[in-house]
Image (tube, rainbow, N blue to C red):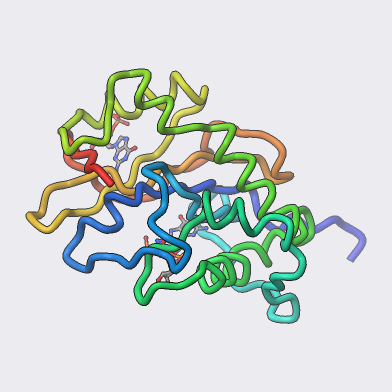
Length: 208
Ligand code: 5GP
Ligand code: 5GP
Ligand code: 5GP
């Protein structure tokens, strides 16, 4: 039509703590490239609508193509490692993220831009630094949800959403951190809407 269609409203930029992905009943598998560093890793950059719903798998004619990101692979292995079983080199995880989420923002971020933008956001946000600066360390200790959110807000400049999962004993732990990015993929913004999900008021930050 004559009007410009608006495909989505903003992105969630989601990072995962590997210690919490692994420290569950389901466990994890290290990538074939070796155990990742004890740092947050990228999960994905997810187009979303302001009402909390989101598009997915938008263009099957534009599948993940490793040759389009060959210059980024070593950084993706380091900063976007897969921890799912069986062990893999990451291609299955990156393909899934591109096919499910990336194709829904392909008009603003092509494949190379999608991955390079996410890697840049990981470096820019430096979650581990923000937490460490506030004395919040991945040592199995328990911290209040509000102190974790404040530390990230202070370090990054924007309010995060914290997603928890449960360790083998059922304790709530810091699993993923959501930040929001405008729909051109150019800058962090305050989240228009937060996902659902409950953490305890005190949550563990396991080592990795
Ligand atoms: P889960 O059900 O484990 O929370 O999420 C499963 C998958 O659904 C996520 O890895 C992600 O691909 C997608 N997903 C879950 N919640 C959201 C959301 O709020 N926004 C978007 N864009 N995707 C989501
Ligand atoms: P989502 O749909 O939740 O964005 O993506 C999760 C999918 O990616 C699942 O199929 C999951 O098995 C796979 N996956 C592979 N590696 C990882 C990982 O390190 N973390 C998470 N959360 N999912 C992974
Ligand atoms: P408030 O917005 O008043 O701080 O919190 C309202 C409710 O949302 C409380 O139950 C609080 O624990 C929960 N909540 C606030 N921020 C987060 C967050 O980042 N993650 C999760 N899972 N719950 C949150």
